[in-house]
Length: 125
Image (cartoon, rainbow, N blue to C red; front, side, top):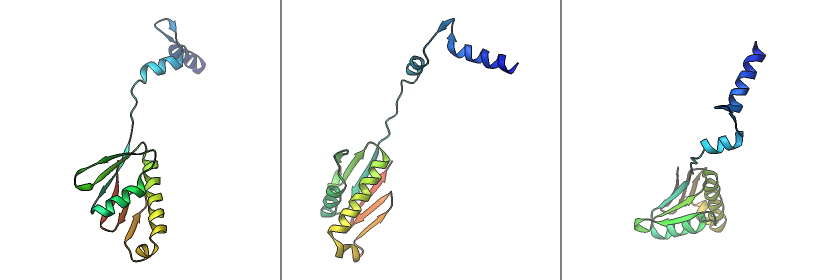
């Protein structure tokens, strides 16, 4: 009985309206909508700190939009790339300005937030 049910279900998948179809083409016909998920990093604060963060975070994979009051939005194709760019920016700033880092002028919350002077870079999903 179980074998008959399995065979019946298999034939129903293979035959629709008496016509045999290719599974791949059927999936392609019914999965036409694709969702593109992007992640952005918003930089806000003072002018000089915003430029420093912008220069440290931007990569060849990102797109930059300038917002009001010298703020920036940097758009990445995935959240992983945005987090990686933020982490690399922190390492760059930390290595370039060791004394300022020791004084507490640079702070980083892993995967979400980077602060430099009076400017902040925050990941928005």
